Length: 293
Image 1 (spheres, rainbow, N blue to C red):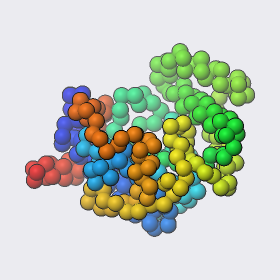
Image 2 (cartoon, one colour):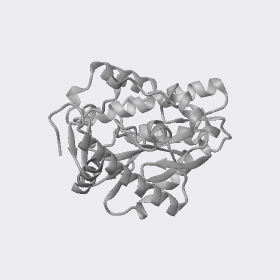
Image 3 (cartoon, rainbow, N blue to C red):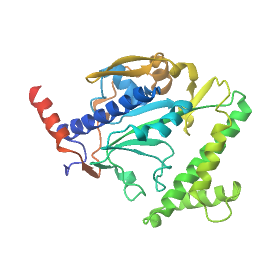
C-alpha cells in the first residue's frame, strides 16, 4: 500500500492508525499481565483528551513508563507477547539507532524520509519512552543532563557511521563525533555497546533517589514533575480506555502551551512515509470505517 503524493491519503492514514491501535492493545494486555504501569504521553495524551483518540491528522503513538516499570516490562514482556509483535531496542537489535524501545508489528513496513538508509528498518510501531529520575541538586542535574545528552548524540551518530550509507553523514556530525570521542575518552574506535553501557550506568545512579522531576531520556524539553505523570486514570482513546496521567492537563500545558487550541489548518498534515506496507486487515477495517461515515 503506497501513494505517489507527499501526504497520506485518508485511507492510508486511518489504516496506519488502526494498526498502531492494535499494537497499543497488545501492549496494554501484556502490561496488565505482568502488572506494569504506563500512560499515554506527548501527542497521544493530547489526542486522548482533545479528540478521544488519535489527533485526526497524525498517526504517532507514544506511551511513557517510569524507568523502574520499563525495566520490568523489557525483561518480562517477550515471554507474553503474541507472535506477530516484536519488542525492538538496542538489547535486541544492535543496529538500533535509538535508546528507547519500540513495539513493532512484524508483518509491516514504515520508513520516514529521515530514517532512510538508517541501520534498522522499522515496521509500524509504537514508541515506549522512558521517564528517568533527575538529580534534585541543580548543578549536579545540569552536569548529568549534559553528559547524557552528549553521549546519546554520540550513540546515534556512531550508529549512522556504522551504516552502509555512512558517507551521507553530515560533516558537522563527523566533527561532533570526533570531539565527543576525545572529550569522553573514546579515543579508539567508538563502540556503541560501551556508550550504551555508560549511559545506562549513569541513569541507574539516580534510580533509587526520591526525585522531584523526571525526563524522557534524553530530551531537555521533556522535564516534568514526577508527580505530574506518576498517577494515572483511564480515559477514552478510540474504542477503548487507556491510562493517562491524572494531571495530564498540567503536563500538556507545560509541554505544548495552549494544547486545546487547534493548529492552523495548513499545519494539519501527516507526511507520507517513504515506505509503507501493512496487513490487509487494517486496510479493510479503514475502508469500512470510511464507508460508514
